[in-house]
Image (cartoon, rainbow, N blue to C red):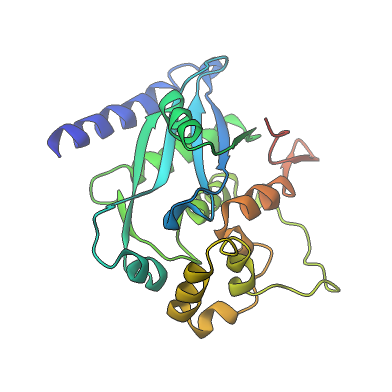
Length: 239
C-alpha cells in the first residue's frame, strides 16, 4: 500500500510538472469503452487520458476500480454499498486490457483551455490523495462516468452549455436505460430490477442519462463551450 501511495504522489507531482511551461499544456481525452461480458462490465466504462501533445501513451485515469473479491458483489453494486476508487495506469496498458476482452474503445479529445485544463488537473490531484481516492459507489449518481462529468463541469464552469431538454420526447427511466444493457442476461436484469426497486423508475434527465458511459459519450458530444465569444463542441470527433 505504501508503494501505491508513493506512485500516486509521483503522479500528482507529474500533473503539476506538466504546467512548468505554458506550451506544454497536456491534452485531455475522454475514453469510452464498449460493454463486456462480466456483470460489472455490461454497461461499458469511462475513463480519462491525459498526455503531452503528440505523445502516443500518457496516463489513463480510471474511477471504476473495486475489490473483485468483495462478498455479495451484485447486491452491494446495486444498493450503492460498494467502495470504488480512482486508479491510474499507462494508456497502452489500459488499451491492452480492453483489446484482450475484444471490447471497443473510443477516444475523443476534450476542448479545454489552459486554465480549464489546469483546474481539471488540480481536481484530479485532490482526488488522488489517500483520503479521497475511495468513494462509495452509486449506480445512478456516483460512478466511473458521473465522476468524469462532474469534474468537467467544475473545470469548465459556466462556459459549459447544455442543450435544452426535448419537451416532446418521452424521458426514459433509469430502469429503462440500464435495462437495454441487460437484455442478453435476463437473470441479471431480474436481479438488478429487484435490488434497485422503485428509485429506478424515476425519469432521467439529459444530464442524468450520463450515468451510463455510452450515454455520456453521446451527451458530452452534444455540449458546447463558450470560447472567445463563440460556442465550440466540448468533444472533438471520435476515434
